[in-house]
Image (cartoon, rainbow, N blue to C red; front, side, top):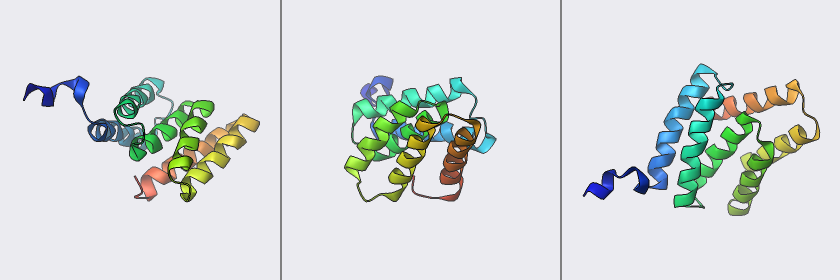
Length: 128
């Protein structure tokens, strides 16, 4: 019974829900520049990924968090995996195009486009 409460044995679903709760606060407060908070969410999602490498919700959120952190190369790796797992998902394709644009030209407009994309997804859609 104690194993149920052991932090090292939490499921990918549990870790994802915990990360999503933290992420929701970041989005609602528009504090994407808080690298510590973003990094804590990314760590939870990496743990979820180790528990289940194909856990779609964790991968989707991880790619968003990596984008918010400006880790475009790592985000693109996750998005490529998502596309391999869900090739018909248009959101993944849009995210990949945005990441390619950011990699081609780093500027404030592209970073703002990333924030807008993320905020729109997390405040106006229910596909998470």
